[in-house]
Figure 1: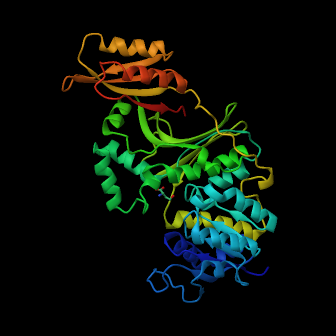
Figure 2 (figure 1 turned 90 degrees about the vertical axis):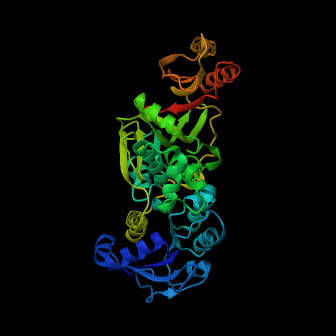
Figure 3 (figure 1 turned 30 degrees about the horizontal axis):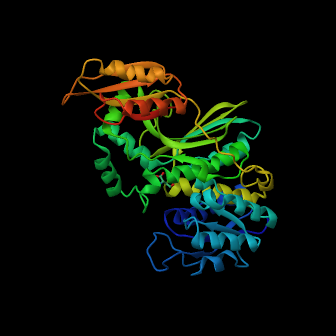
Length: 428
Ligand code: HSE
């Protein structure tokens, strides 16, 4: 058997400890599958003396992750600290410069610096892999870079933030408003230290930008993701979307269009009987569409110790096996700069508004929509409450410019009690 593959692990939170456990408890399995044993040389974390439920006493300790990353007895630097810059980036760069392979779960670092890091790793002849950065235990990076390598990818979609999916499905099942369910999620410890990473769509946007790079051969462009969080989704939206046959999801959608690369992370309606519509709780789902394979749906845990460690170790095992694949599925030097689409693809929209109880109010709304070229597919008015009535409209496919014209004209109508809500409906 070949010499052992030696790891240096920086970051001993949930994922880091999951990796330590996997290496300790599955040593034989890992060696059998890799053709060589996998060992840990040294570890690093913010605090040394802490009960982590697994002993790290047999590994060397480093206070500084850069020192860890560049040790002679480290072949693979496993970066599990998080943070787009700071120590994680410094140690990753140092590892690459020292000729070490890198495995990371750090979506923020890759979304902002992935292209430069991929260029550096290729120039140094080392691997930079990130299966655990996107959708936890779901092997979606492998699916795109390997399993679907012979396809033109037409669309990538995903629910890739379990916290947001928990909040939206809990609102649906309990009838509780957003603020109450947000607080529940907080009590359960589901939210990131900075909750806007979750509910603002940033974490999921990072993941989408990484998948889009692989899918469409472009340099990672997180700045090109049109981001909208779930904070404005109301319990009324959830109920009324349900009534029209839809669920609301924080959905990432990436597609290459004649207008450029479109990347959106926003609350969208999906048919409630579709796989995405049926995705409940903290689970993730990624839908990959290719011209040969058609539609592939991957569902699984997007976070947690076992699932994320599983993804980290899949990359480690590839390195142990000597299997090499470019970070974003093709040489980084060949990735083109992304050209963001200036406008979004036309889709049907869900419009919710409250109308004053005045003769001709509904007719005025319909006229404004028609004048802007927005065609109504379905419409429903609920009973008046407090002298206003909720009205829901599902449009046919509508170009965003037409919708904007219609919304601007509506805001000038005196029949609306509040600004209308517009959400995209994504076909699945
Ligand atoms: N906070 C993320 C989620 C997990 O809720 O899915 C890490 O990206």
